[in-house]
Length: 366
Image 1 (cartoon, rainbow, N blue to C red):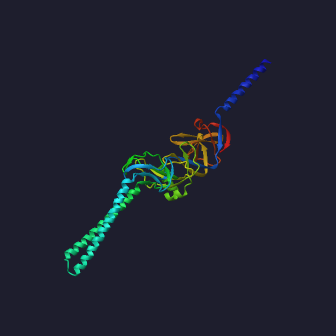
Image 2 (image 1 turned 90 degrees about the vertical axis):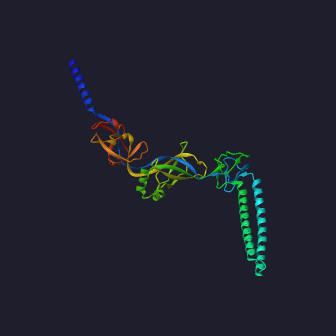
Image 3 (image 1 turned 45 degrees about the horizontal axis):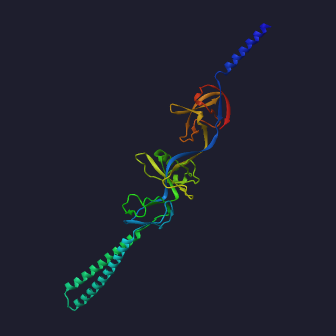
């Protein structure tokens, strides 16, 4: 009986050793079978927002502000009066100019009568040619004086009109750094107010020269790129997505020599006034790839600046180099070459796998 028990124990130990040997060199890994699929990748670019029109309103005449007719942040309309500058001296100047015009007109009438009279007398040889020419010169001088007086009247009227500072565009007013009683002029360093037309907002951002070359090669020209590129999205500074999609409608024709970047502009409708001039955000440009092979980044490892995956071939791990698309979403790669539909690869922990490892797979479909 004792011998039988010893024999059974030996057989059990031998069985355990064989099982241990069978499992040695074998590992359980999650695998996937790659199949073509579609992916949309979004590339983000930091952008500065500008209103469709942004105008700094400055006075064209000097004087003391006597009235501010808007509140800070008000919506204003084109030709709406925003400020009034002391009009008293400009009204007086206009009255003087009007009087000077009347005086010049009277002098011109007198000079014309004199010239006509001298012309008749010259015909009768009562006056000399010198007297006639002198009368003509005085007439010409009177005509010039009248033209000068009228020009001064026009300037005076313009100056008086400039005392009512009006908005050049529809938009929203900024904060106002001046108050009633402040002395202002056309040379002030800070504008009276800024007016921004934000019904449409432009997002300005930059791309590298290489990225623009990719667009040119993809679409054929910048004009085709702008017309055929998909709509872009905007992420606001608080991290939330803006509801309206935009369109890239301008690409600079020159490269910034200092940065090597090229400026682009995307326009966004702003019906609710959520976007403001001077704000910031991130423009998201989608890139659509169809019938491509997509793998998780955890399925790859890098060696000497090359990317590899482990295929499962006849139950064993076999490394294979792959070429990946230069854009990615942070969790996946699009494979340009190196994998075919139906290939089985290790999905996780590729950097820990050894060549030839026997794989016990838990296959999932990609």
